[in-house]
Image (cartoon, rainbow, N blue to C red; front, side, top):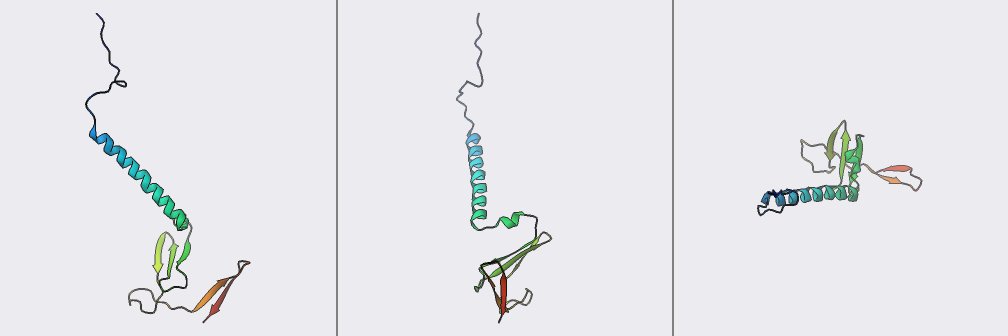
Length: 111
């Protein structure tokens, strides 16, 4: 008598694992999240945040909502210069304007 052997790789059973679909959806969501982070980093030129070097970045220069973001020794600090700041936060005022010439030289003009 001949025995029937079933190959489990070729066998399509009626028992379907419903969690298999959820796992696939999780994988797709993770790929989407990573792609979104890479796109936002490239769009807003935030690649400095992922290096080990210290940096200073100015958001919205010359406007009322300007922010200065610095990273020193691994700590990120945000500074918002304005005349009506809280007493516990850093204080500052605008003291001049800096211009960058075509040759790369920066000129500071005090007010």
